[in-house]
Image (cartoon, rainbow, N blue to C red; front, side, top):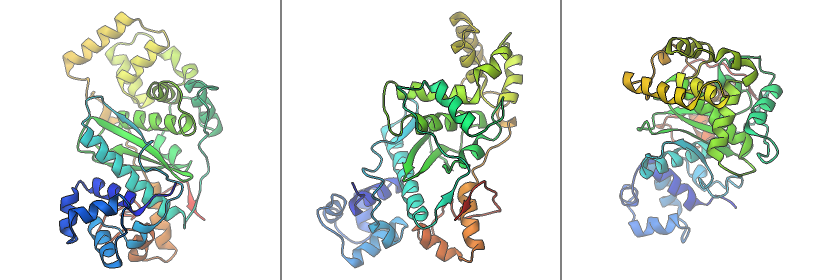
Length: 350
């Protein structure tokens, strides 16, 4: 199933956070006419197409492009969010990742990547999340112990990671495919430990739930993330005498929250349910449930692949206007593919 002009209009408008009435007014058409365009009941003429493109910050070619591999936009995106997240918020973020995957697809159809690793898609009916995490680490030839710079490891497999302020702390991140390339969008306001857990969670979805949906997919992604960041064979002997001080030291070593460490200990049978209850009571008394101490001291992880792609294209002779056109954006827009500073990446354009 191809993505239509109507699909693209809906996603771009929702991503911009504007109503049909507002967009129709900007391009000087009726709301009824826009509704027909969005529902593919009528195609906009050339003049209207250009006006819509400009209002939405894209090129006309981007708006009419057939994204054949995307199918029904946003219907199967994975999102890590709290149950209390507002539908208006998660629908807006869902639209944002679809805009990013459209731009990614639009660009990479012309400029393919050559990743040094790749994502293994495994059937959760044949492999447990823990086994899947072990297979992924093994095939990526990762060193034993803590994962250093998870962002770079994921980017080395061609995953496009983009950070944005979601405007709400109740949504952490989401992931989806853009052809053969995966896109992960995460909340830039999260502390590093939560970002890393969210990235590993979304990696779990990409490994386990691209081709198969069986069982509790969120719990499976959680188990994958824990096993990927804290492999049992490497961490189990460190999960003794888990005082807050001990957990703080382990947090610095493993790059995950004290809560994630204690949950790992609980799942591995190192602490009891009563221990777990007392631990969370301690966190609540100190106000640490939402933001723990020491999170800002962890090494920051910043996505670099998108900027690296843009930088290499500029080095190949493209000016910024040509780069915007290649991405399918108007020059007055911002894009993670437009480099603002030097970027280093483990992939290169071919």
